[in-house]
Length: 377
Image (tube, rainbow, N blue to C red; front, side, top):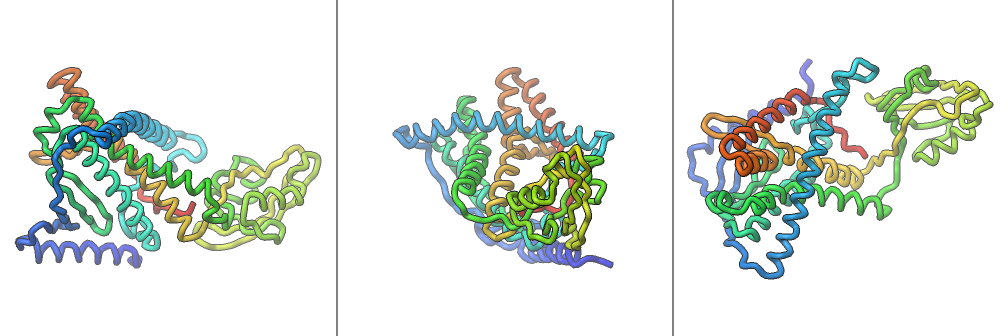
């Protein structure tokens, strides 16, 4: 039986194709329809800044951007190779690492999370492209145009710079421009995370199991990663403090005692059940790793802003080159790889940068995962 999610996704794709068929040959001015989306050019342009305090401040931001871009590229490869090793690992849990999740409504984005994803991604891409434009203008490169786009229901944005001026600019200036967007995403994620940590915006609503020790009392009882702990011995659990207190009252933390604990959990599919965990003397834990989660609209919005800005930043920091007939699409990191390679090694360096971009693209494709995105913090 075909699920409602597949039907909805098919209907969405069909709707975009109909719109494209109707409007593709019509002159709509700044609006262009694509097979699965729409592009709207804003018509904004800006000549280069003539120095001044604002120009110097933006230039300093550009230097910070280069540092953040470098760190983000390292973080991308660290996560990518760690994921690859986890998938190749023959041990317990091997082959289950999430990897890179493409944003597909109804498939990897649950429909009830689509609004959060669209909002957070919209903020991320707008600030990303705005940072490119501002730094470019400060570095003497003219902004020709900018715009927004929607692909399926995923928002996007873009800026068009004067390519001749960009290619003639100093390498440092080009690095600032290419790095500015990634830095904006990283700084937004850090700012939102800092604000959420410093201000009591939301209270935890439960405790989720994020790992289970092999052979532990929890594993023997049937506790598994992804379950939510609802009660311990009939008493509700809403925070880590609740869980620690109740396990202590049950005798789990007493190394000399045998403890029998009744734990009510909710599975990932929503079913609830009660499991009996028996802790023998000699242990002070039942063998689970847990984390609080926050099941509220505000908490989900905050988490979406953090996760998606980090995701946009890391993917753009990766040197990626997508070869197309007669052209190529490069990420910010891809532009840097090509420009730095050309500066150091001439034409061969440009080819080397392109080869790194294609190799990174293959790495990402090999690590794709289509599991649903969980935005509950």
